[in-house]
Length: 376
Image (cartoon, rainbow, N blue to C red; front, side):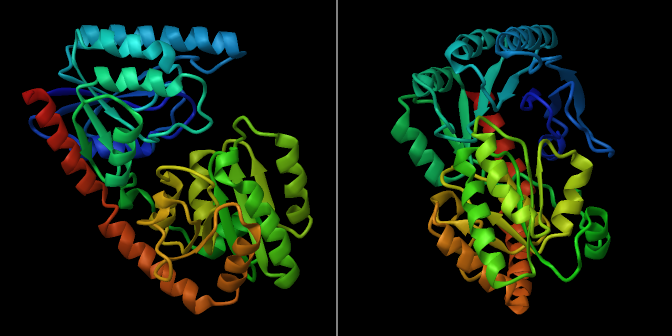
């Protein structure tokens, strides 16, 4: 069986996609991973083929981005046509109003499997759900992360395509090696006396960084050792508002980096931190939360349902009402003042990451879905 696993477009790291493909690859499943030309690839050996494309797909103004993206899709289709894959595994759609036609056309060449990462898209646009429904209807198999996501998909879409739950596992534990905390803090210019709370990832309204900035500003008045370490690129938000809120905590010595963070810096940010904060206002899964598990960090997370299995109140996390900066401030202060609880939560994050969020388990389920798809 020949499978083409298509990664997301743009400047990202292909680490997790490649790790999953590596685990799925076996004697009778030959994996090829299709990445953007700007995707960062870790320096390690892989047992899969790697193809780069999507050249310039996100460059220039909006009109140019659309033109380049459509051109990149055309090149991908040509690659699929020439290489005779049994399955094309897709994950991300930027223009679903057009891409439903694209997915339909791919079925002439291969079976189509789609991983639905966010059942309801962030910042969804008019007719987006209807367009996605068409895409999911033309697919041969859909993969979701949880039973709750399966229920949400059936509730919001008419597609009758078979659905498999593959678990929320994204990260391959051996890829996430912690470095010495003192070394990481020296690299970032952070005092070892601080208690460091980390925000990491894209900055959009649904991610709740504004709530966190307000909470940290209040918490620092109660405990001078509280330090916010934040990094992320803006995505369709009021940048001036976030910069204004950030100025308050930066004046106390905290570090807030607005922009894309190179892959090689990730280990420093996570290794330097004491707690990962996930202040999300909505969502259906979180790859950043799993990074927290891989780096064995205690978590503070909002009470949205997708965090229930990964951030467990009193076991490896404290939870607060989404959007409530006062409750979040109290959680920050509590963990800042209790090193014993932080150590206990850290151990439990390690256990949860190695069991419930095993990428090996996910790979087994993806294989099973591939076999079911080709036998239909």
